[in-house]
Length: 599
Image: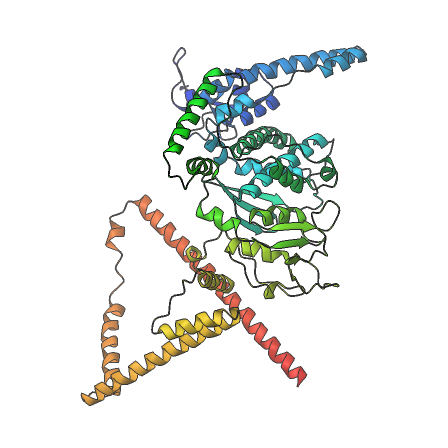
């Protein structure tokens, strides 16, 4: 009888994957914790399973790196979990002995743990926390919309905390004008903000009744939520202090009772925002006071050296420089998009989303209900957001648009025409700002229209080849009248370009006739040349690319996979174009059918 396959002599140390990786059951034995506590520790510490190249114990096991397990072993959180487990045994023992008073006393004094040190350990800098904020925001926004169910351990207190964190985050993004993209999909509303150069994308579900299924392990999700709540609290604290606003905010109880938390936070910002002229100093420090007096004395001496007709100019210069907030071009564009525009929200539109988006782009918004800043009868309202087939009472001093108009204006960064979004009409397609149309190879018609409008706003319209400045001037003049006139102007310019090409071709033919060469002879010669060139291609087999022959098998397969991906993209584009042609043909046939019925 021979030796087993993985025979190792006694006393010899493990080597390779057997020494570097352990299974989950082995990790639990090393840490001496239960499976639920091990999952919590892994989630909090950011330890995830690994996939070794050679699985020593078999493919049906979950493997962890031994260094990760030893990292958890020396964490203070492990001792806290053991202490909590021992304390729960005391409570269980008191209940078993029917000692209810002792059980209540022990329950009220149960130990708890905090994840503050874990957050600081995993995210040494604030930028690291911002980079990892996509999943926390999505999870917190999800639980903010869920119902409280005791069976699944989803408590009311936790739901309220998630809603508070969401509103605090949205209030900062709206106040600092950091929102960049919005897209309304079936799953919910996708948002993208840019904070300190980091793009943060999250998904907020629609405000509807959520149905919870039994195939989801809510214990794991609640463990993730516990970590994400702490992380988002730290991020909100840092962001609020960066604009000199106290955290946590104290809201108006009347607005909180009316579920107007976001508007209450905006009012809190207005009341507590103050630009920092100087750094805060510790009270009672004589050294800081002495330094302040010396700096004031230097400023006063410099001020006396300024011209007499500019009193206090240096002081104003210092204050302006210190109170000025650095804003990039994107922030300025977002801040001025809805400037001097007042919006009123009807009761059927998504109020929370629009209350977040419109102020983020410089607009003033109100709604139908108690606690609103102004009523529907206000004459200064410029736009009313309506999502119903018809509108009863109409004010002539404002425009009635659908909610999609706001989101499309935000993504395009211009004020789009309101005519396609009026009440009762089918709006244009809601295009995703997260898709690069040029990279995909297919640009929708409405995307081309938006690009033309953006170029018109920026006065960056370039003439087509073969057109002159007269066509450009006429198109710009027609743009002032509206969007439809611009389309007609572009069509007229295209026709003129074709006419110029035909005229050039006519002049070339005249020259050839003068030289004694007819058009038919030229075409025959071109046909014979093309046939001669095509004959060798038919006879000879297609030679493979020599660079492909020099590749290794792995690189050759990678190149083939790239070609297959490109071909799939082309097929997808052709499918979209075919679908578009079918829709246009159906629309034309429907119009003809209607005209035939009318006649």
